[in-house]
Image (cartoon, rainbow, N blue to C red):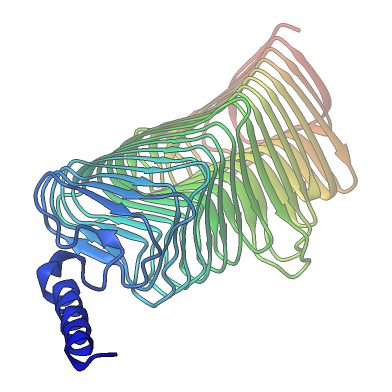
Length: 483
């Protein structure tokens, strides 16, 4: 080759290389382009990206194309107004690295039917949002497998106005890894797919803050020590609906299908199925729907609550409230509780709540209680449905302990069977204000009505049927018998 031609070719190659390096700085070492992006631009990940993407530009359109991998570090958008469509695979695996970190207001994210967002590191969330205004739709899979990681995490100062539609799977596996975590003002979440959490202290949904609305049309399941399918903590004003086709299930070492703690003004409605299952005879408690320190809330079961607890060390509760104020718990559906230890259909402890049964309660256990008020003066209890209690040591249809000044009404049917002490209605150690007991239904038990230190005065009106022994160990100021 002539020397002059060789020199020209070398010079041309050098100029081309320099052009690649210096003439297009926005495209150097990046596959999600343009990078950096300007306000209002469209960023497209058209080839695999192993360095992530970050931008503070406003009003971006961000697209990951089909079959494209974005790995390494997070896609971080800190400019308001971004619209994100993921058609590919966003899969970082480092600790503290989320799939998408959305750190500004008014964003929209769609995870399409052939896409996924998967993280593998500790504190690596699928989607992290800190801002005001997010619309998120998931049509495939968002999952995490690290400790302290959430499939969806919504938190941060000023977090508000989040709308989520899950049409497929939100899943976590790890310690303290809730599938969905929310702490803010204004959540509207509709689940049409599966939300699952596996791992100790990992909940299907852990929600706190203000104005929370959750509608479950499919499945929420959790397995792990101290878990809940749904956990509400310090929620002020919330509506939780489990639809007719919905399932909320806690199993393994989990403790609650649905639990609300230190919250107020809640409306919880079950039209579907709530299931709690514990097969370990040495395990902890398993419960269905329980309130702790909740105020001014209504809980209604129109569906089914089924609890199976083989643990000999703990109780099983279908519906309950502890330390509650002015809550109303109503069963208008079906409750089934089977326990190796204590089985309780509906119970209120240390509060001023109302228990109402318009449906069917069936409890079977070592000790079985259909409905119970414990140390709850000023509360009330109404059975207009059916209670079936069966115990191998003891069983009670309605149990009142340490709760003076209350009214107990039975217009339904109470049947108590088994071995040991079998009581239809037991009112014990409730000294103080007068107690009123009204029966216009049917009570059938070996011990029909027991009053044991029930108070200085009890007023009894019976126009129904009472089969069994009457033990009146208390002054009865008024006994009206018309049947």
